[in-house]
Amino acid sequence: MILTRLPIYFRRTRRISLLALHLAWALIVAGLAFPLFKPARRDRFIMTWSQRLLRVLGVRAQTAPAPSLPGGALLVCNHVSWLDIYLIYATRRVHFVSKAEVRTWPVAGWLAQKSGTLFIERGRRADTARINTEMRDLMQGGAWVAVFPEGTTSDGRGLRRFMPSLLQPAVHLNCPIVPAALHYRTLAGDYSAAPAYFDDISMWQSLMQIVSEPGLIAELQFGEPILPNGHRRELAAQAEAATARLLGVTPADTSPQTPADPPA
Image (cartoon, rainbow, N blue to C red; front, side, top):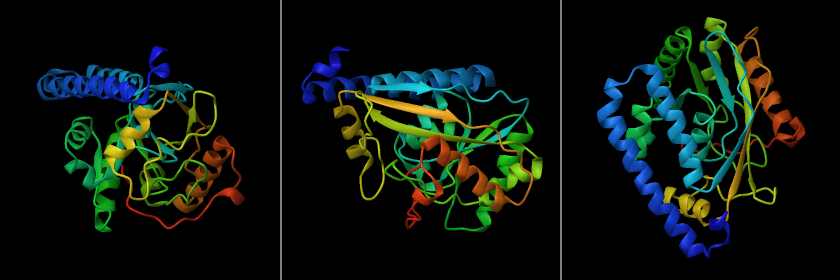
């Protein structure tokens, strides 16, 4: 692809310009057409828009098909970047659970709300009960809900401990838990830190890191669905182990790092 051979300045400028147009398209459709769309058409738009967003940013998605299930499910995945959301959207329509602060982000917060994201106030323990009820209603209706049970992002080379609190709706409804794992690599196939969105990095800095790369490969894999037989803590451990296997790490490689507020 010609963009991979351009100097960084031109590569960034072209991608940021295309991104602005892509966001403008989303704002117009979500603001004017979403109220008129049937749910299936809205879901198709979200998936198609996410696929094109990845291409605009120079990200090549390599994804496996999501498991075919007859009803709702809870998707659990490791968390590296805000790109994770669109990589998953590009593969499977889900409803994400995100921290409440995301709703206040310019453009991205409004679009997240329009796409059906559930926002949780992590500082209020009672808010978990409300979110669990909303998750339960969606899954009972056949929808998939996605959570990042690490509670924050990492650099993508390890896995933090899975927190069990948001797995309770799957236990209550007897819905399967689908483990997933995502990786980001350079075009040569090596590990890439460019998409990692953690520590004190800003959204703009993260975006600049991504669009400055010649290109990125984003891989998404799914594990076998886990039947919710047992306590949510046991299920969290099973889901963590399944995700670790997909990532190619062992439980001994996982690192219990100090949690911070997740970017998404």
